[in-house]
Amino acid sequence: MATTIVNAQVFDGTTSRDWTSVRFADGLITECSAVSVAREGDEVVDAAGGTVLPGLIDSHVHLVPGALVQSLNCGVTTVLDMFSMPDAVAAARASGPDAADVRSAGVGATAPGGHPSLMYDPFPTLATADEAARFVADRIAEGSDYLKIFSGVGGLWPSLDPSTITALVTAAHSHGLVVVAHVSSTAGLDEVVSAGVDVVAHIPLDAELPASLVERMAGIAVGPTLATVENTLGVDSRPYSRAEANVRLLADAGITLLAGTDAPNPGTVFGESLHRELELLARCGLGPAQALAAATSAPARVFGLADRGRVAAGQRADLVLVAGDPLTDISAVRDIERIWRGGTACERRPFVPSPEEAGQLATFEARIAQAVAAVRARRSR
Image (cartoon, rainbow, N blue to C red; front, side, top):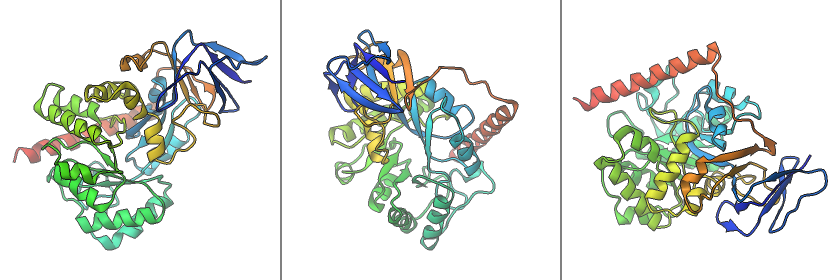
């Protein structure tokens, strides 16, 4: 059966359209129009002036049990995992239609003893540029959709040298993979930009980004994960203010920004924290349409997800209906009325972990606590 939404405002992933009606069938959008396109036999949904958006995309998560269900509950129909072990990725990919779709980097590239190898044992690492091609090949064999590189954590841990980072980028690009680099400092950002990465995860807090560096970042997308910075440091802190200032510099320079949460870092919640990320991006001066694009069309374009991220005929029917107008007030994205994933209406339901999943969550939380304690210990030296 086809579904037709009527009496709606429509944000297509980049801008507001004059459409009031969207029809979809067999998982795909078939028509968008300024007049009703409902046909006999359709399920008709009256939006009553609410806004239809593409399903949201969280561009930075790490997989744990419940991640995909909680994300979908908040209108996040696709999540991009930025590092998880193969067993967690396999379990996520096996989730049904009542959970968000997932793409994954799998295991990220880091130096022996580097972040986040402390949390896992055994953990594949590499020490030299000569090992880059094999590392990338192993990730592809495991089913990774793109490559994640850890450039180091504020000098606290061993990190990959510039030649190895460049070799990883070259190897990944030779296989058509997008390369995402974790950074924690302005120097680290400079390093990965020089290596030719496609996406930068996080925003440096240690200094204002030099204009020359921002200029060199043309064509590179950035996911600042402000929600995690806020939860870690507080929105009124000086480092958080520096984060916002650097995001403003990037936005003013026309750098593509991606909305991601880094959930489940402490204080973040799958799905809900993406709504907060959009609000924080708006605080940085992004207009509502630009902020919404950071969670829809921009990540779809950057990560080659050609079938989603936009409301248009032929696109996958990942759609969210909200009661208000997020193009006027970005927080209206929280007021969700309906969600469709691949054209299927989604029931919002709480995640109740099984005993096995509860054990996995406890193990993950213990690993996080171990890593946090180690960072604090090293910083106190």
